[in-house]
Length: 274
Image 1 (cartoon, rainbow, N blue to C red):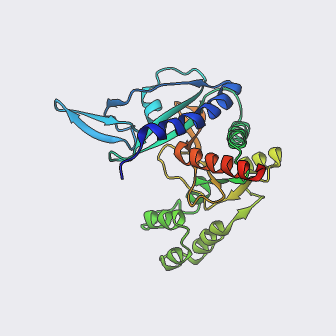
Image 2 (spheres, rainbow, N blue to C red; image 1 turned 45 degrees about the vertical axis):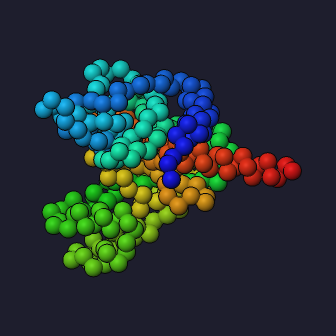
């Protein structure tokens, strides 16, 4: 069935307007990156194409696109609405933000952006959500040795496969620590940055889950994923990274999923008022 792009555009626009207000209220500025850019090893995802023997990428991952084009060291607090192509003509509409540089410490920056995500979801009347927070370094520190099965370990973590980890030829102590990490889910953490975020917010929506892992090559340590009831996959995610020696944190939300969930919430509200 052919997609109704016009109706879909109205749906996305209504949701994006609500989210834009939240960004402007927090002092973020909207940016518009070009649809197509010359190929660079720093660009991720997107659709690769060639024109006159020159290689380009159409609609790449926005964070990598931004970092590949950034030329100064000023603090940036920005947001965007963009379609991202995942290596094919099929795209995903995202709305997200990046906080690059500036003075706040890691925990303060991460906490403020988590607060912003909560504000956005509340504005969309989506209150039954969780923001799962994990640490890439928690895993890196365990497999910092020369393990031949490094890729298999991370794939097992990503898919939360206990059986896959148990089948790997690893020292017993390392295997047990990996399994313990994968089981870690709750409201406490040994990681000082995560602990600081949790203790300063006292937010029941923030869940420590070391099984949360996002393997974009620019993410440095703390990562998050956002879930909501009645949706089978994450509606967004993000993480911290270093760019030109500066601390950064960014996240992206699935705009189409938010539009559908927000509309469902509106429909239920109308039904309850009838």
